[in-house]
Length: 149
Image (cartoon, rainbow, N blue to C red; front, side, top):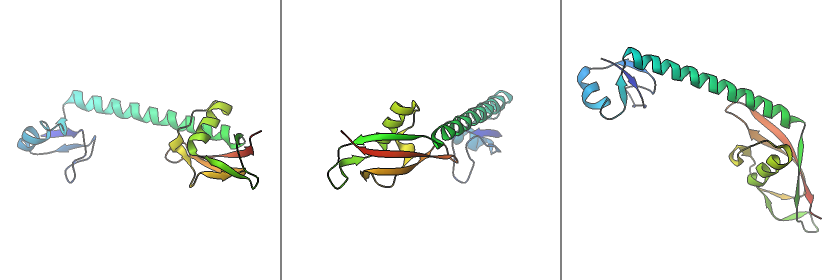
């Protein structure tokens, strides 16, 4: 019996894979547990439509990520912070602060988890921060941390 795996099952099949399995195994375990569905013509067509939709969505997200990367490439943002006389901040600039500053100043939505800083920024100065826009696209933005007046 041919089945379409809905979830990964170690050693048996991966999600969206069509495989031939024993009828009893499919009817008594895979289908009732929600691991697979029967590979009828209708279900195969639904699977192919979902794959096309996913490919289209991925292409659109990749395009948006490239646009954001190009928009941020030559840009810089300024973050005002309170600092002592030796340029050390009273606190720190975190990825959340950077995401909020980008949203306010450049009107670009970036999640704080996409911003890759190893440690919070604790001094005044100019920093280059990497932003992971997608799996394989990484952008960069210049951040100016200046003394609040």
